[in-house]
Length: 64
Image (cartoon, rainbow, N blue to C red; front, side, top):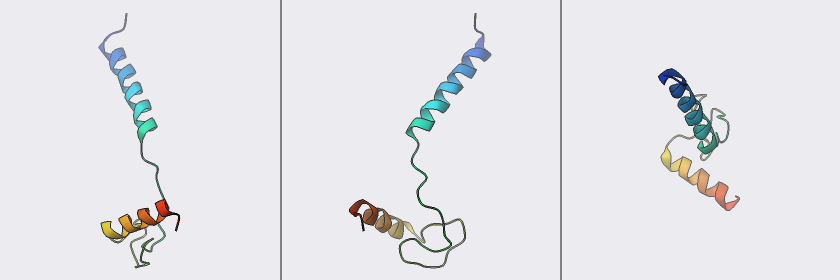
């Protein structure tokens, strides 16, 4: 018979598997430049603000 620790571990495994199934794609790699307007950014950023991010995503959906 399973104890609380076993049940908790099984639940954690199930939650992890579900989270991996529904996670968002990682997207493009950061280049040091805004992927929309080309502004210089820190190495780990992809866009300079939410507007540029939204514009880039819209262009990607349009196939531009």
